[in-house]
Image 1 (cartoon, rainbow, N blue to C red):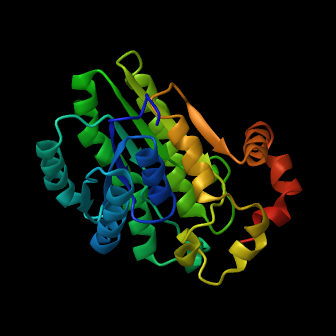
Image 2: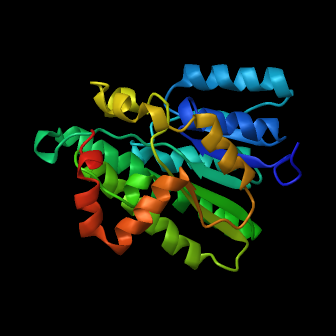
Length: 264
């Protein structure tokens, strides 16, 4: 049980599997109430029932496809009517497709930008007035190390995560002093089903498998930082050092790491 989290409601997008599911589990373990959003009603229901069986609390869930931007107004109106106060938000929903731009399908490009950027911003847009009224809240946006250091075959995915980093940094300054924390999470590759869609060939997963992060490890870092002033969570540390060196000397780093950059 964690006094900072116990009894608090935290909305999680992309909560039915992978990192989002692990975050929900750890919030429930700490006495919080995860509010689950994802596309799959069956997966959400199964997770909610499992967590209720373990922790004895009802776990609210809302099936929704966040790429249907026009339906988010209705979704958040329903959520607002059912919850007097929500204390935190974890914007986890997102996906990637690794392709050279000339080989990419426009549908994949559009969907990546819709989910990774537009939906994320609109979720915050709906939740921010609630947090401001209560003079408290924590917004956690899941970005990526790809948002700091772009590599071949991830031009659109990296662009979407660059957008999340930039949005989060500006938002943090906008709400400073109003009781609201904004944290950006920049993980490297995580061993989840993300790569089933991003890398159907399995080649990239195989090349980075030895240093893939575990979803429960990343979730633990995120949940342990909830309701604390934390600018960024960067994992793994060696990758974050690489992204900082890249900012200082991009030409040198691109030459040095050319083979590594082309592992996708």
